[in-house]
Every structure is written in C-alpha cells, then in structure tokens.
Amino acid sequence: MIQDILVVGSGSAGLIAALSLKRKIPQIHVRIVRSPDIGVIGVGEGTTPNFPKHLFEYLGISKKKFYEIAQPTWKLGIRFLWGARGRFDYTFDQQLDVTAAELQMANGYYCEDEFSSVSLPSALMREDKVFPRQENGCPDIQGWQAFHIENEKLVNVLELTARELGVEIVDGRVTEAEKAADGSIAAVHLEDGQRLAADFFIDCSGFRSELLGKALGEEFVSFSDSLFCDRAVVGGWDRTDEPILPYTTAEQMDAGWAWQIEHEHHVNRGYVYSSQFISDDDARAEFLRKNPKAPKNARIVKFRSGYYKRQWVENVVAIGNAGGFVEPLEATALMIVCGKVQDLVEMITRSQRRPTPGMRDLYNEQSSQSWIDIRDFLALHYMLNTAMDTPFWQHCRAHTNIGEIQRLVEFYEENGPTGFCRYRIPSVLNDFGLEGYLVMLVGNQTPHRAGFTPPEEDRLRFEARRARFIETAKQSMTVKESLAYVHHPGWQWNSDLPPAN
Ligand SMILES: Cc1cc2nc3c(=O)[nH]c(=O)nc-3n(C[C@H](O)[C@H](O)[C@H](O)COP(=O)(O)OP(=O)(O)OC[C@H]3O[C@@H](n4cnc5c(N)ncnc54)[C@H](O)[C@@H]3O)c2cc1C
Image (cartoon, rainbow, N blue to C red; front, top):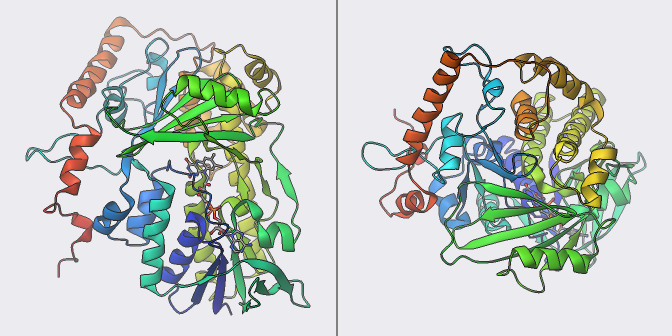
C-alpha cells in the first residue's frame, strides 16, 4: 500500500503533483526533494482553462490568495499571426464546431473570407477586451479563460500552499537512485549524504528526468520527424505603455514562431526555432529586430521534443518536463501536468492505494495517446501554413508528419468544416476536440471541395450574429480595467466564501 511518496523536483509540475496528492489523499505522507542550486526552468507561462479549474475547483486554493501572490492576467486564447489570412484567433470556447439554430450550416462554412468575432470570446479578443461588464460595473468573470502567470510567482504560491497542507520540502541534490531487488526505486541519495526512502516516487526533475530517464533508463520517443524546432531565445521587458492583451500571440518567424505573453507589469517574448535552419546568433538577431525592447543577451533554451514511452515504470511516475516535452505553441505542458496528476490520484485512490499492473498499463497507454495527439496537433499548425516561404517553412510543408490526423485533413478537404469531421479524430480522449482542428484548418484557409455558398438571407443572419457579439464586446472591459476591480481590497470572490448552511 502506498504510504510514503517522494516527489523529486519543485517546479510547477512537482508542486502541483505534491499538492494534489496531499489534498486528495491526506493520509499519504508527501515529501518533495529539490535542488536550490539547479532551480526551476523559469519559463512556462501560458496555460489552458483546465489549469484555473485544477487550482480552484480541484485543489480548492483561495482565489484571493492566488491572485495576490501569482498576479495572473487572463488569457482568452491565442492570436495566430500565421498562415494565408495573416491572422486568426483560437479561443477556448466553440467558434466553429457550432451550428446556430437559425443557420443552415456550421459556422466554419461562413468564415472562408472573414473569420473573426463568431462567438463572444472571439469578439472580445478582436476588440482587446476580456470580460463583459455587469450592470453594477464589475467584470463578469467567466470560466472560459486561462491564465498568463510568471513561472516564479506561480511556484511561490504553489510552494506556500503545499507547505500549509503539510507537504514536507527537503533541500538537496539527488546524486543517485538506489534500486530494490525487484527493480523498483527504494530510495534516493543526496549530495550531503542523506538517504530518502519512499514506496512511490514522482519524477518532476524537469529535463534531467533523474528517475524515469536516468535511473530506470526508459526509452525516449523523439518527435523530430514532426516537430523540427529545438531551441528558444527568451527575453522580455517591463511594460510601459503597451496595453495588456487578453490573449497569447503566436507569430510566424523565419525559422519557427514567436510567443508574446502578457503579464501585468512585464511583456514576455520568446522565439522557438529550429537549429537546423538558423544559428543561435541569427535567431537572436531576428528576435531583437522584432523586439527592440528585449534584452540584447536574451537567453537560449535548448530542448528536445518527445516523451518517455512509459510514463509510469515500476514505482515511478514522471510528470512535467521529466516525462516529455513539446514546444509551447499551444501551452500544453501545464495542461498535461494537471490532467495526468488527476488520473494518477484517481488510480491510486480507486485501487485503495495498491495500483495494479493493469492500472499502470492503462495510465501508460492513455499518456502515450495524449502525447501523440499533441504532437500531431502542433505538427498540423506547421504543415498548414502556406504563407511563409523560407527554407524552414518549405521543409515543414513538405516533410511534417501529421501522423494519425492525415485522415481528418483528407475528410476536411473533401467535405469542409462539418461536425462529421469529429469521427475522423483518432482518439476519444483528445484534449483539443474538433474545435481545435477546425480552427487550424479554417484559420489557415485550407481549401476544401464542399462547395457551399450561403444563400443571401442565411449570410445576413450569420452577419447579424457577429454584429451582436461585436456590439457586446465593444462595451466590455479591458484586462487593465478588470484587474483594477480584482485588486481592490473590497473585492470578494464568490468561490472563497464559506458554503451556505
Ligand atoms: C521555452 C519554453 C517555453 C515554455 N512555455 C510554456 C508555456 O507557455 N506553458 C506551459 O504550460 N509550459 C511551458 N513550458 C514548459 C514548462 O517548462 C513547464 O510547464 C513547467 O514549468 C514545468 O516544469 P517542471 O516542473 O517539469 O520542471 P522545472 O521547472 O525544470 O523543475 C525541475 C525541478 O527539479 C529539480 N531537480 C532537477 N534535478 C534535480 C536533482 N538532481 N536533485 C534535486 N532536484 C532536482 C529542480 O531543482 C526543480 O525544482 C515551456 C518550456 C520551455 C522550455
């Protein structure tokens, strides 16, 4: 029976894992060991909507405390400065996988020329607004958003909450893993001579993958035939007069793409690129030309895309970068951390803390499928972009392997943005849903042969819907205005109130 868990690493993955295990299974002793010398990766600042849900609904963290320490801003989606249109918005609600009662066809069929403001969140993005205004003037904060959060501030609030819950944190560098006779991990040894034993280990040691990769030697599955980027140049600046945008921006570059992430007092930029197609110096120079305010010595982060074939081996489960990594084009890392931690907690709980080999195999199969879904979805972003003609983008169009979603693309090319496309999504547990694929296909103006031209009356009804969303969005609130309410000492989050008797 699992009684004692040791988490290696206290980046966002380690802290979320430790907090979730302790919150949901309080009888387990949960300890973290982490190396202050190595520190945390310090990047990873865009999230998806399951992240605030995990914090507030699953873990029950007080919103007041979280907003005070982590100082998040809101993210309605991603603005792609990308592809044939030059720009389209990917929101977290349904823009395209929708057929309005008054229309003949799904929304995508009306968006061949203009694809914007087809839902309220997309209209808000278009107008640089974040929330509608309530009658009392306050922002109507909806559940459709995610966060932008500075990594260090996130780690601070998670660490504080973990300690309050009774998670023990030991400082020290793991130098060796001691194996038991059955091949499982019995303990880790620290540089200072301490031996930390446990009966279950969570490897959250980041790219070092100390237990799963190094000690257990699990096979790494590379995504290098689908995703060609392997480095990022990262650097931001303190905000002066730039508006705080309610979305992440993803912008095509000569040999990759650049993100812009919006914090209240800081603008974070990074250029993800392929070292096969551009040198570090040239990438930094291109980045600085675009972002003259970025520091001249913007740092370079190297990574490899892929995952360990099994995420759970013996008594070790890897979460976060220790288990796998893909570039942050859809900010999926924290999304998977939260999803996988919930699965693990559920499996440990439902097996009365004695997880069976069958549970472990199921966890591994589902985790692999999640990684493959993410790989294929990101690969699709590259393959569909016909706008750029540099050697990197030519290579992407010609050689990107989009794996199991090739059939979905072919179905789309034949039938257009119909809801039937969902039956060509290869896995049922897919995190992006049909909406994600449709936004990429319609957003990139991928040609199809459906041949539907909306009759005039139908088109006018569609335009009337857009006009209503735009009208509401124009009267809505900016991020700056909404933050002013949330920071006011009198602001009260309903979810922080004790339940009524
Ligand atoms: C360029 C880039 C951009 C990214 N952008 C995003 C994004 O927008 N959104 C997103 O969700 N994710 C993003 N990520 C991923 C992001 O890194 C992760 O989401 C997140 O920060 C989780 O990191 P981690 O906890 O797995 O690893 P880390 O933060 O690296 O933490 C590792 C921990 O392990 C400890 N450790 C390591 N080795 C040892 C040892 N031997 N002994 C003891 N302790 C040890 C370290 O001290 C640290 O505490 C990005 C990553 C990169 C590279």
